[in-house]
Length: 416
Ligand SMILES: Cc1cc2nc3c(=O)[nH]c(=O)nc-3n(C[C@H](O)[C@H](O)[C@H](O)COP(=O)(O)OP(=O)(O)OC[C@H]3O[C@@H](n4cnc5c(N)ncnc54)[C@H](O)[C@@H]3O)c2cc1C
Image 1 (tube, rainbow, N blue to C red):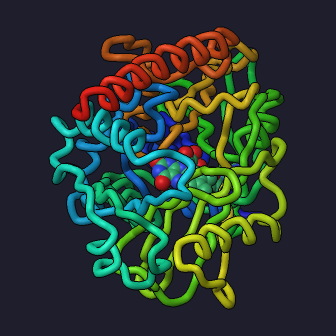
Image 2 (image 1 turned 180 degrees about the vertical axis):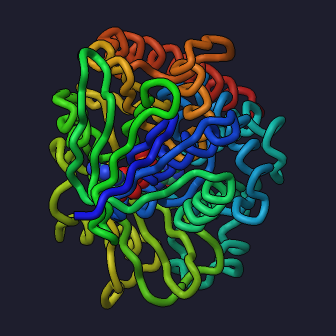
């Protein structure tokens, strides 16, 4: 087998949004970077594509909603051609799981917190008649009106493409590799990584340039599988998210609805000649194996039937992604990092971005931590810290109380 020797400061394993964000910041800080990727269809490829602080997180993690707005603004400034303010219509009616005034209180609070940073048209309420003119494919007479809100949206696959070109242009190597690598560990440090190039079959040996390598495991749902190759057990849980792709687009706008099965939001997003409906959210163990199941498609078809009053004859395709959660089902959507010095290897970190908009901000924070710079605001979570569970419930309670108080004030006074 032919051999190639590479030297680098940082090896990033995984070229989803997390790995590419680490590489993006690292090359700009003057590090020599090699990104290894298996070419799997990762979570980023299946993401809905909202680059948003997200009003539905107000009850879970209110400080993060405000902090995310500046991360979203940064992304919009970096990639103005890709990330755009997009209207979403939220139809409401007597069969909705939440009353109009409660939804409006949440939207008003959300805009108050985030609109100073993200320039967006204010939300609007439109009547049932106006809604039928705007969206003739909606079930006639079923909805009494709708909110029209604006969020930043992106085609996540295109964002990955732009990041790849940007990173390669700045001198980083992105190398397609096979699934297995050998980590050569001396003491508590990985001295070299040996991996097989998947296109060339070449054995690639990567060593530190002037100091020991720094390695970042950014392999999304494969985080635990990758950590195991370093002899480390990473305790994470996966939730499967399926998006159904339906040929033809019945709607003129993107629509957010509430599932008739469990009241959860479902996003109906126009993608060229296709409507993407999803995502689902199903506990799926700790390994990203298998595909979607029939019940998920039924759930998404029900959501579309609720909107149009008609059963769609078929769907073209469905794509699956896996959300990473900490044990106990904790889903803060904050970036999570693990420094594996705690597991016996000092030059290995694992990183999960939480949500798309926080990948670049989280990656920058990770690089600060890796170089022992603790300056700047720390909003990531330490995946090793068992106190996170406690902190999570504390934040959740405080967020719920603050948001609830606002909504109550809104209900009583009729204004935000
Ligand atoms: C259905 C769904 C919808 C979502 N929608 C949104 C949304 O609208 N907005 C939002 O902000 N967030 C959303 N999220 C969350 C967001 O998509 C994820 O947090 C993010 O994409 C995770 O990115 P990642 O880079 O960590 O993982 P991935 O994108 O999965 O990338 C992992 C990479 O690792 C590589 N890899 C794996 N093993 C190896 C190995 N041994 N060697 C080399 N490479 C390897 C794979 O090839 C892959 O490229 C959604 C999540 C899901 C599941």
